[in-house]
Length: 150
Length: 469
Image 1 (spheres, each protein chain N blue to C red):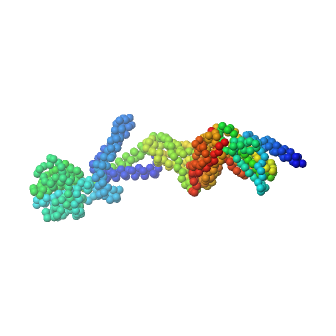
Image 2: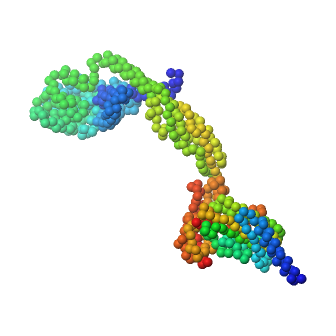
Image 3: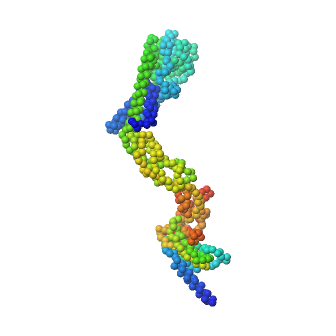
C-alpha cells in the first residue's frame, strides 16, 4: 500500500511538471514541486517564494540575482504557492521601464505548486525591469525588481 | 473716407492740437526755429529715401537723431521757462498775448531820471529764456512797476541798490540780483563792472539789460553781444517795445495775431491729417508676425500641460508705413481659459483673442485652432527602483538591494501620475562594486510638472548585497 502511495506521489509530480510546462507560452517555462508546508497553512492561494534567478536547476532557482547581464541571454522569475486550494492561474507580468513587455499565464494545481517564467534578453533590453505576480483578478501578490545590463 | 472711425477723428484732432500748442508756446523762440529746421531735415530725409539716395538718407537720419538731443540740451532753459512760467491751463489752452503788458514808458522815464541824478542802475528785462540758472538770486520784490518804485530800488542808501532789478510784465519781481560778468577781451575799458555784468547776462541769454552809469550818467542797453548807448527817451522806448514784442497799434496787432494762430491751427490740422493718411491709408500690405500665445484665467487647481502650438502666425493687413512701424510686442494673442476643463480644450482663434494696433486688420491666422491640455493636480506615492548600469565582475552576483525610503510622494497633473507606477534612481554603475555596501542616489523626476511632495526626499540610500558565485 505504501509503495502504491509513493508511486502515486511520483506520478502526480511528473503530471504537475508536465502540466505547467504545457501551460507556459512564449518564453515562459516550467514549474516544480511546491515548497514544504508552513506550520499553519492559510486557506487562500498564498505566494510563499518569489525570486529572480539566472535559471532553474533541480526544480529550484539557480543563482538568485537582481542584475542580468545581456550575456546571460535570459532572465527567470520563480514563484512558489502554498496552499493552492483549487486549480487556478496566476500571471507573471513583465514590465520594461513601466511599459508592459510580456504577460505570462501559469496554471497552479492543489495542494501546492511552483512555477517559473523566463524571457530572452538582449543588449537593447538594458534598463530597469519588474515582474508583477498577480492572480486572475489582477491582485498583485508581489513585485520583483531587477535590472538588465549590457 | 467712409472707413474712418470716430477714434481716427479723435486721433487727428488730438495730435493737431498738440502740434498747434507747441507752435503757440514756442513761437518766436530759437528752439522753435531749430525745430522747424529739424522738420525740414526730416522732409528732406524722406525725399532722399524715396529717391533712393542711401547715403544722404542715412546721414540726415543721423543728423536728425543728434539734433533732437541737442535741442533738448541746448534749449533746456527755454523749454523749462515755457513749462514753468505758466500754469497748466495756460500751457493747454492760454495764448501768449494774454501776458501782462510791461509799462515801458514808465521804465524809460525812470531810467532817464536816474541818469540825470547820476544814480547807477541795472534793470533786466528777460526774454523767453529762464534766467534762474545763470543769475544769483536776489531778494523777491513783486512790486508793481512805477517811477517811484524803480527810483527807490536804486537809491544809493537802499541796501539792494548795487544789484540788478528784474522786471517781468508790470512787476519788479526781484532786486539785488547778481549777474554773471562778461569775459569779453574787447570790452571797452570805459565801462565798469555794472556794464560788464549787463553784457555778461545778455551774451548768454535773450534778456535785455539797461545800465545807468553812476559816474557819467549815461544809459546803455545790452542785447546779445551788442552794447548800445541811448541818449533820448524815444529810442529807449522803441528798444523796449521791440524786445518785449509790444506793438504800438495793439488792436491791429492782436487781430493779425489771431489770424496767424488760426492759420497755424489749420496748418497743424492739415499736417497731422496728411501724416495720418499717409500712415494709415497708404498702400495696403500684408505682414506676418509670429506671436506667442498668452493664457489667462486658468483655474489655479489645474495645470497647463501642453498646447498644440506655443505661438501663432498672424497675417496682418494695413498700410505699409503702419506695418513697418509695428513691433511684435504691440500685438497680443490671449486665450481665456476661464471655461476650460481638464483634458484637451480646442479653441478657435478669432479677433476676440487678438489685440492688434488700430489701423491693422487680421487677414489670416495659422493655426486656426489651438488644443490646450489642462489637468487637475493630485498626489501619488510611487515606489523607487534602482537603475543599475555597467557590468559586475563575472565572479560576483548582486543578489538583493534595499532602498530607503522605498517610495516617494509626488504632486502633479493627474494624467501624468496615472500613467506612472515606478520612479527610478539616477544610474548607479556596477563596475566599481566589489562587495556589499551602500550608496546614495538621486531619484529622477521624469516631468517638470511633477514636484516632490513636502516631507518626501529626492535622494535615497541604496543598500546592496554582493556574493561570490
